[in-house]
Image (cartoon, rainbow, N blue to C red; front, side):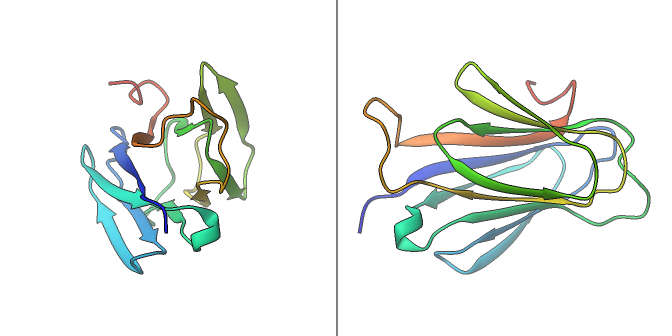
Length: 136
């Protein structure tokens, strides 16, 4: 068994202040993080059957602004949504931009078994936020 990479999931949804739901496969634990909060979880490899499943909490009404998910470019992920989405790879990060509307999306993040040399394995982060607030 390999040592996990510490992944910090940050909730930066300012406009609608929605909760983020996270399921961690290796510990079989579910977490809800509120607006402007974060949680750090160890992510083992896909070969060890580990992943993080992340979605926005279902509250009344739509998200009013663009939502941006910032994930490490070394990670593998499956994204599903009922609406239009833009995926952007820039500067070592992958950005998923979701237009305003119902929070009908989810992302499953895994750590590949074999990473290229030089890829950081100790820690990284995933940030979910409003288009303008994700970098704060």
